[in-house]
Image (cartoon, rainbow, N blue to C red; front, side, top):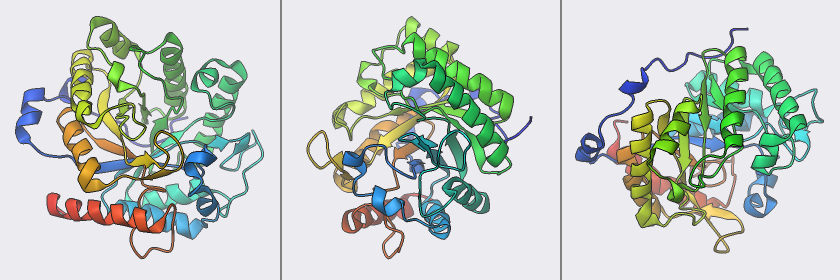
Length: 344
């Protein structure tokens, strides 16, 4: 089959300016994408969202996508297509989780077709949510690839089906473990067979362990992945705010030398309500998030965030996910900056 959207046409060596050139511009890049989920895997973290998201209708999902487009989002990354042993779309592989919309994936992709957003579609969370177990378990691997077959047949006709997201996120220790490289390349092989023109993305974490050395560069060269969007780790307290720039500079140098995958960021918009655990709540834009953007911008092609859903809401909307006052306040803070610093 030849399904899917147009892929990246840039030669790898065209993807990188020099670090010096980027820093000289002094420009802070806006947020151009976000993760999105129909349900959050952890009730402790998403307890304020899941009940609300479960009630979203087809029309509400459609309007939420348009809401995200309105504030400048060009990419959405679907976190999962299954949770808790159930599918999040009509599937033969598992019973479907009961939601207010029978097929939320069809709803958001149809909306994205209309407004021009590009989607990366997940292929997993079919079993235990331990990332390395999912990478290694043979039955999960089988179901993952069966689901990709289903997803391609059902949804790859959408112009918004831009690529795949392989969601079993690996940490740098300081290198990728072999299981992660094998997992990524296995997924990429299936993705390219099903949707030859699609773009693939992963989002590793623990960037404070990153090293710019020959071993890490060789790993990047081995991985058949178009985009690596590293989690900045500020929201989960893996990374101190003042340190994120130096870690992304290390990653930039490694990617520049490898000349294989584009370097993006997965910037965390949240903080925990109990220090390092509990509900995810919006961070303050002026006190923290703008500094995250400033630190990341010189080194990455694009800034994506985790995440709009549950953390931001347009004031006055009837489609609420997360606490209204805090989420609309962050929206207003970012919208003020965005309208003053972009050509919209």
